Amino acid sequence: MAKEAPHVSVEDALQATAAFYRKSLWTNADSYVEIWMEKDALAGVILPVTSMYDVPLMVARGYASLSFLYSAAEAISELVVPTYIYHLGDFDPSGVNAGEKIEETLRELAPDAEIAFERIAVTPEQIADWDLPTRPTKASDTRSKNFGEISVELDAIEPNQLRELVQGVIERHLPPEQFKILKAAEESERDIITRLVAKIARKRLR
View 1 (cartoon, rainbow, N blue to C red):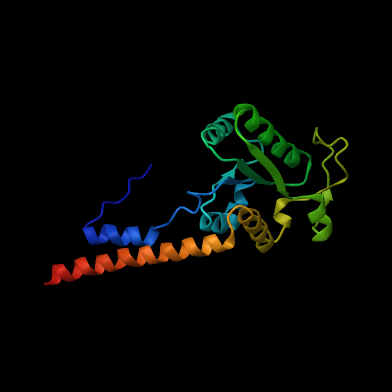
View 2 (view 1 turned 90 degrees about the vertical axis):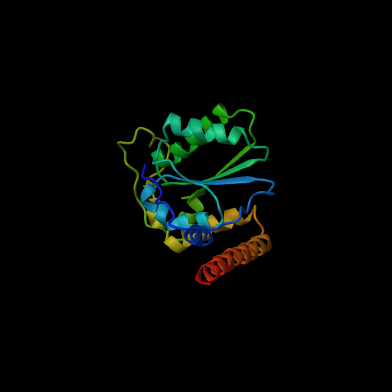
């Protein structure tokens, strides 16, 4: 892991703090939210939303490893509020089953945690309502029996629709008004740090 470059002065350190200063939106929230997705290639599409709302984005790459799920379950087990997990994946036998396995394993590894798991994409309703492009379900997939004839890639959903979908489920737990208040406070406190930097710089010039 690369080491962070040292700061050359107090002003430099404070400027860096001001640039990346964020308030925790969830400190007093009555729930914990995670977004899980099957494909890391699409992580960049929704990362701006999850980052803005300080929500973890978990990329499982299909069937998540046991060690990855164990770490996630361990963190969930330590929470005192309910956990809400929203999953995005392909609508095909493996994609749907992968989400089911994630839910099943997390519940097994964190039996005392209160977990609500919801698949938010791709769903049959979205396929119909958004007229998503389909492909034949692969007969070679061992899970294809009784699944249906069509499958849909997560990539078929427009990026803006994906972002709106993710934002919508996050805002179920964080009212927009609370978000506005906290972002205003964040901006105010960032401004205080910036003015402190300027004050120190002026003193150095005297």
